[in-house]
Length: 142
Length: 142
DNA sequence: TTATAATAAATTGAATTCAATTAAATTGAA
DNA sequence: TTCAATTTAATTGAATTCAATTTATTATAA
Image 1 (cartoon, rainbow over the protein chains, first blue to last red):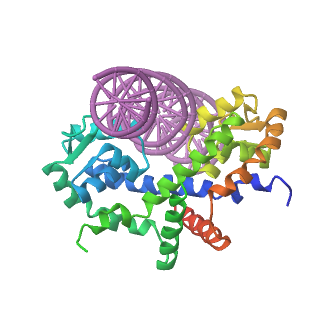
Image 2: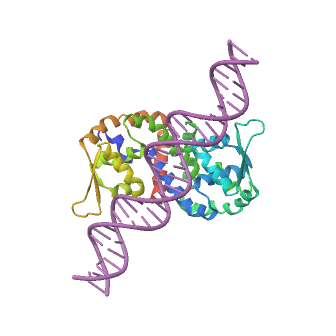
Image 3: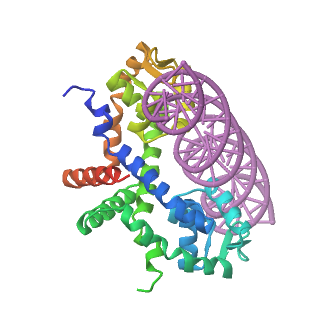
């Protein structure tokens, strides 16, 4: 127990958070690859599946990502024909993204993914619920 | 409650994990920048501060990172004079990394960082402990 | 109205991250 | 021993991620 203990890997909270996040995304990848999606593209599509359309700004607020990250992601999704990008008619600054029929159709196949991921997260109901709540409490502090 | 609910962002566990990890690293950055370190370099230095030396392979096992990530990180740390890279005398395949006096000296300044980060993680003792345990339970499943 | 401020995307550059491959060294089995 | 398999790093290329800057547009205040 010396003054340097606070710098030990095993005493960190951020490190397992960071390692878990990367590890889980890695488990998503083979399933997402079947749909031709990366993880970042997948969470963006989640928003479009739910809302149909969304501005780039609003998407960034939901995903905690900025335009430097989203610009290439959205261009890629448009390239695949899953969304359509266009300027807002009332505000030229705003990029509006709208899901296409092809994008909607992909939801049919994506719906199988959560079940495929479930065995990768072997937690009790209580643990899952607590983890979910604590993570959102942390997110609210950012 | 339809069949697509499992694809809603708000029903995901991976997403808040991923967002929290990025958010926390972002809070580390200004403090780490004062030491001239990135987050990845910081967690690598944590291992060297604790162990003094380590093979690249063992470091990767501890950090859940592979040589594609670590090779440039370790070259950068050597460039800064914080570690020294060299081949094992008994096995030429193995890259051994050893901390330098300058690397050890940096620990004196790094020791202030955890206290600076504490206000960014406003959880109860119970929440922190549960989060820590659940994350390590998840890591053990990878 | 007009100049200034604020907002939204895009761009740029540095650093990660990972999958896949390559190269070199070591191990192990025939 | 010798050759095939394994192990360890390094390399390559694609995609993120973010800080910082730039550009274009809109809002606001004098």
